[in-house]
Length: 65
Image (cartoon, rainbow, N blue to C red; front, side):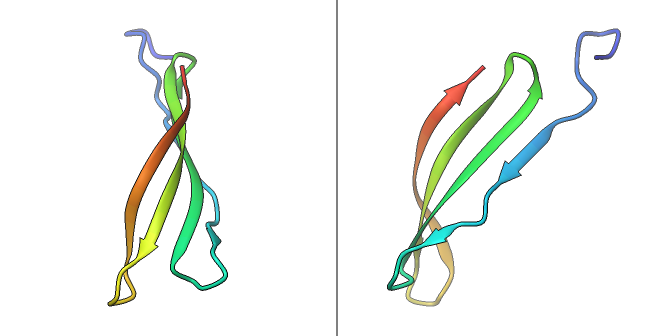
């Protein structure tokens, strides 16, 4: 922690997605933490577009601090 009360480091975590058998959807976990009471984690649902690109279709919050 710095003297001004802020933290110098923010960590981000993103898991390798689990892809559905047909390859059209995927689920991953993501979080961001920048201090003891400054963070959150959530599940991310991804859907593959017809052009092959992935788009976030939804998020569900799992925790906050």
